[in-house]
Amino acid sequence: MSDKGSIFKSIFGNAWDDLPPVMHKHYANRPYTKECNTVDGVLDVMCAGPIKFLAPLFWFMGGIPPLSENAVPVVVSFESDEHTKAFHFNRTFHFKNRKPYSFRSRMIQITGNEVVEVMRFGLGWRMNYVWEDNCVRLKHKGYVLELFGRFIPLPLTLLMGEGNAEEVAVDENTFDMVVQITHPWWGKIYEYKGRFEVRETE
Image (cartoon, rainbow, N blue to C red):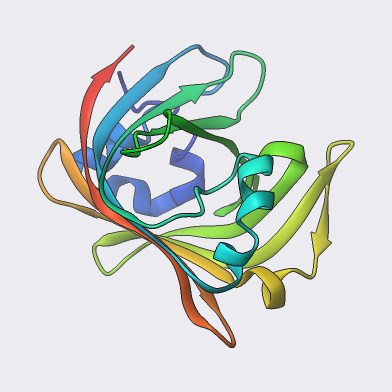
């Protein structure tokens, strides 16, 4: 799959050419296509504080899996949308004592490197995508609700915490990643981290 015209080329801007080969493969999907890029790996998942307390809500909303377990096999499909510029994340977690759990979302570019990840029921995480210190960083900018094509700011950071993520190239086909949610009172209340390998493209 060529990175020419990639959805993320305009998001990273001038930094696109500085990204290592595995990131070009990871973010190669073009808009208005049916392209699919699949990676698989293993994650350690940690859940604590308010996330654990609100677990039933998270399960219902189909968001991040609210439990703790190490060495969880995960398959992620990055899919383009033939009708829009959205970038879809379809994650499947294979926990030991549960049926496979699907966490789906889509990334929508707002302007420049500002992106919203929209989950079930329109809840969104607003962030900046940056290439910094030899890694891709997703920097928290708050939460929103997608309603009739508009993004309405939601004051949820005090309740939900602040989300940030990093991805670091290991070699041409492998990258490490970590997602963390940090609460102003509770500290780190959620994390999943591990290594993924680009498996196939369509």
